[in-house]
Length: 338
Image (cartoon, rainbow, N blue to C red; front, side, top):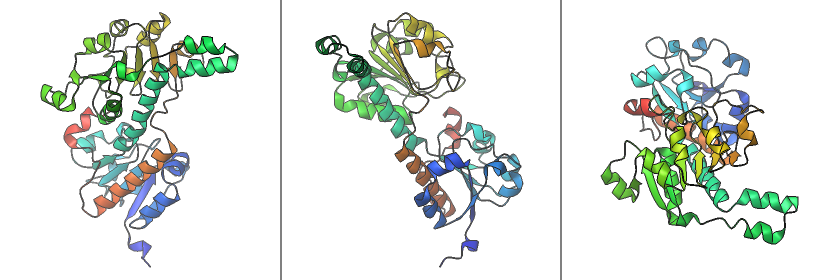
């Protein structure tokens, strides 16, 4: 039997509601095979973490995790690795430590990206095949023939889809779209002509993407350079009946522009992120029939939760054993991530 006291301590810095989702018993068992889990209560997570983390080589964080105090890492503390079971690490307060190389950090964004990509495809297909209208009509007594003949929808394969941003999610959306045979255009400042040819996509400027695509799906990071990059003019240029999908960040769109364009009734939008969350009950978007709304849930599935936890645990194991990390946030790329 392994002497648990000889194992390195690894703190799990997540409130119970998130810990229960992301670190269920099988995941905790996997962690216990090589480390001694240190579980903090919700009350302890709101207190002074410095004494708890002083001799902790690694921690596992996630959604709703607290800020990690600077005194926990070098030169005053022993923390060397943060394994984040979610995507963005901004709220952990470790940006400087990551970019200066004081801390190594890994995240589960590639895992969550799978759920977001599937959700994006679901939204596109549901819109094109008029699923929401069909379902509502079947329930409210709309005539059978009128419902079917008045909502024939369209094929994804006959459309041109524009992808804004080829990060983790954008790449997976691209892969999911390929079998449908649709034309795929991409706007990404880091994509050169050679890469576009290799991927079989059409590189487009931002204005052309909105003007020429039947569907535009947003997957850019929320950065100072991208905040408000989509204006009222971009939305107004979209073809009649076009769909915009936003599973990235509401901040990519200029405040007020989305509701104003939807009010005109020309286009549709599937929105999973909002400037204010939760979305206020009185928000106009709730009243617009051409807005498909969801509560920032694109990356949330029960399967993904477990995979996020297992991914975070595996990264801790690799770090402690001196093995290469699979999902490390590289210092040179840290500033580009959402």
